[in-house]
Amino acid sequence: MLLPITGHASDADLVTRAAVDGFVVWTTTDDAPALEAVMATRLPVAIHGGPARDGVTLVGIDDRAAARAIGRAAFAGRQRPSVMSFPLDADRRSFIVRGIDPYTSTFPVTRNRLLGFRDACNDLGHDWADVTIGVCARNTSHDGRTMARRLLDTSQAPDALAAMYDEFALGAVHAAADRGIAIPGDLAISGWDDTPPAAAAGVTTIHQDLRDHGANCATAVTAQPSAPHWMKRPWQLVLRDTTSA
Image 1 (cartoon, helix red, strand yellow):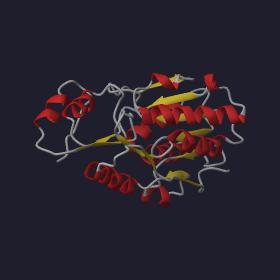
Image 2 (tube, rainbow, N blue to C red; image 1 turned 60 degrees about the vertical axis):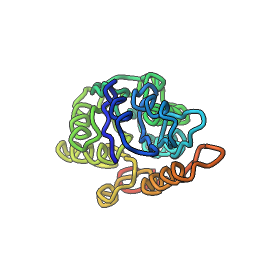
Image 3 (tube, one colour; image 1 turned 180 degrees about the vertical axis):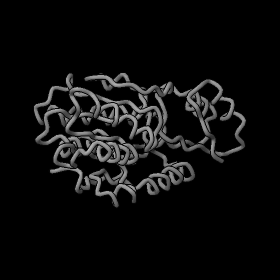
């Protein structure tokens, strides 16, 4: 059974009415009502991506380390790095901001990727306070393309865009093409997830096996290991044509 949640209080009712004997919670916020309702059931639980909870197995990659690696690839040799981000919280607002504090995000995945991109900037001598972050409301190529247009049309347009999602990166590729911006000469772009469309477009990305993540979540719920832990899954930086590193 799939329970589509919104991040609002009504999600708890969906959980309490669900006729199930275990839950997999897929990447939600620290304060998600659905997660609190799941924990209250005392049924077997696994969480993907976060937030972590005591006594519950967490499945996912080290998002901060992966973001640091791909940030270094995307931002190397650039002067105006930028990030295209997932939503920061359940309100899912779209906006542009400079040097945001990663800890303002209540999504652990978003927070850890922002921390990793900040680490990459520090490694390369960029001041995080000057880095523009375009926060997308939804995880779609359309949102990525719209945000990329907004970023590229500013007076200080970025020369590197590190996206938290391949669909955002593909949207940025299209926005750059619309403006005659050369990739990677004038603009480096990176994505995340190593999807087939991103591979076909030559997008530098982070490979992670989400099918493997789902299988491990299911195993954690059904097997309920005696010592719940972080099931840290592998990831790989995949360098392609959209970055010069």
